[in-house]
Image (cartoon, rainbow, N blue to C red; front, side, top):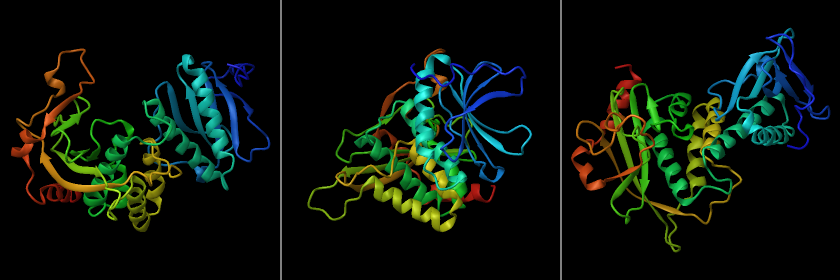
Length: 333
């Protein structure tokens, strides 16, 4: 790797210290290239306590993101640590992208927020997502999750709680977790082969839950002559507006999750218009058609399979059942 910023940084002698060099004196925010006593390469953003981020930090393979106190001066540090030296070139690209994106921030707090938002974007890329906008399937999947957020969580819970329950963009087994109540969101073409694609043996595994629902919505590309079509950006904008109206503090968390899902506000999805068909909810339990972790041999994982929609009909949830279960969770029942 050319222009390696860590090449001439020796590790410190003290276990609780780092050896750091300012990235660029012309950048108003405290970015430092650094090394720890364990020889690990670091990018550090030093900031005041009131700029400290709250909520979940990104998790990337081979890269650790933490917040800690800076020694002696009362400030805090947002630290990006490379755990696997084999990924040093990727880590360098991540760091330069973070620095470039955050350098133009109008405040230190915004610089911290932008740095984390860019990291969530890399979270999506390193999970195998593309960098040229969402594919049609990814758009449908995101719309399906946003509709669950809009119709079932935001009406019943404080906005920050509703947003925090959304785990799908983080690669979690279930898209939504409200205590021990889980929801898996799926979207499919109405005229498609009547199957639902399941991406792992954990998605429809209800062990450890009080209730697991499968929410299925039909989404088709809108005919060119219809005025009823909507884009993934339209849905994201609408849901974001509802969140901002209820609790502006939850908006940043929502934007982080959108970024982790691969969505960028600057991408143009106006040519991808969708129309919504039927939606339904299934209660996943008992003999619901599925493969669970208990069914597969030891050492087997990432099981991908499909289930026939027709075989799920016996498990249709009653009208309002999902709302009732969530309402019970809201009241601690």
